[in-house]
Amino acid sequence: MSILSVVVTILFIANFIFAGIIIFLERRDPAATWAWLMILFFVPFVGFIFYIIFGQNLSRKRLFSWKDIEKVGISDVIANQLQAIRTNRFLFQDMNVENNRDLIYMLLMNNGAVFTQDNELSIMTDGHDKFEQLFRDIEAAEDHIHVQYYIFRKDALGERLIEALAEKARQGVKVRFLYDDLGSRSLSRRQFRSILDSGGDVGVFFPSKIPYVNLRLNYRNHRKMVIIDGEIGYTGGFNVGDEYLGLSKKFGYWRDTQIRLEGSAVDTLQTRFFLDWNQAVKERSLQYDPRYFPDKEPKGHTPIQVVTSGPDSEWEQIKNGYLKLITSAKESVYIQTPYFIPDTSLLDALRIAALSGKDVRIMIPNKPDHIFVYWATYWYMGELLKAGARFYIYDNGFMHSKTMVVDRKVSSVGTANIDVRSFRLNFEVNAFIYHEETSRQLADIFEDDMTYSWEMTEERYAQRSLWIRFKESISRLLSPIL
Image 1: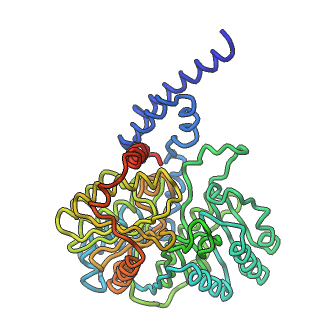
Image 2: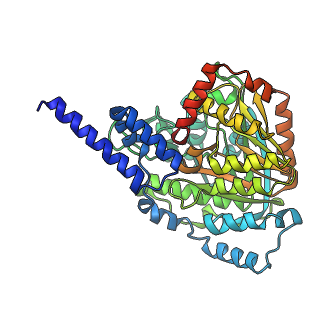
Image 3: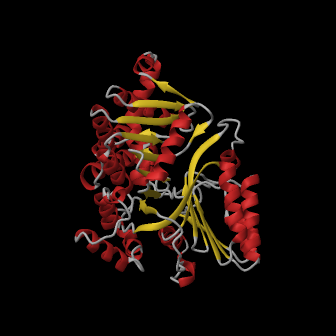
């Protein structure tokens, strides 16, 4: 038997073994199971390599200690809040908040998402506004700056941020910068030399242990957070790069949503940064210190839960929060997302809301940055158009905002897209906001964006060519693993 025959035989055997693992051992969504089986069957050799890199589930057991750490310092707060809600002793600030007690309880019980009511929140939808405010906050920092991004470009904006952080490090402020190995794949620690030489620290999330081969490639830290002095927090859709200032020839104006927080919700962002940093930089792990969680004077009256999810989670908490919001809608559901690939539960929830007469509106970009995701989105669009949902195609650049607003009373802003990757594979963070004024503001922003969009009607959708329908169908079959 030739060497080639031996190699082919080994690959075929491995292919069948992986197929058996997918079917019998891994707890996958049936749609994802079928998608992987199709790949292994139709392109066995390539499928074998793809499964090794993209298909393996992340073992929760390996991250179990990480999950335990998540509740250090807040376990008593969680227990007290749960008990108060169970016994109807919790003092919600108004009826709008109390009407969402089931959602608050679910996220508190299953995610450790502490409920806070003393926050001040501001919304930013333009990259220039967001980064100018961030640079002002960095300049005013006195104790520490914790920065975490999925994508970080070493362009003009990236260089400016690095220099601003290095300057604060030279002043004695403790600077820590964490980035994702895939999202910022062109980076290396040496490109942060000015921060490192000034006394700051840099970490990489899930780096490749073997050059050019990363077996955890499929599990990415998609969170974007900045915490300054434990007093100010940022999260939302913006990464760092010139394109987020609208300077990309391909995308043009970049439309995103970011929130800036002051209040007790910042402690939850800080806790999340601790956990992500300690997972990535075990030899220089962060330990609890009161300086990172300073006592706070009430800054406002915005009730917030900061919710995180990832492949280490037992439940898909951000998705579950979305489901609870959609099913509780009395009047309207507004969603902005760059990628719309809902699983069966979300698709059914939105379909039922639309069929029940709720005003369901979904806004997506007209410019694709991931072509298969773009065409899969159009397939799911058709399913909801038939039910009476309305789709708006943003045509003034690129829509990257990840927001949901229900009844103009409750909302969510964060890093999670409406797709399987965000709910099951990526590490994400979203703020659930139980504040009518903020939610009205987000709804008004949505309606303003409608003036820069065109509506996809059923009639227009029906005019798609056979070629486009073919691309949609193929992309939809692959959507569970995109």
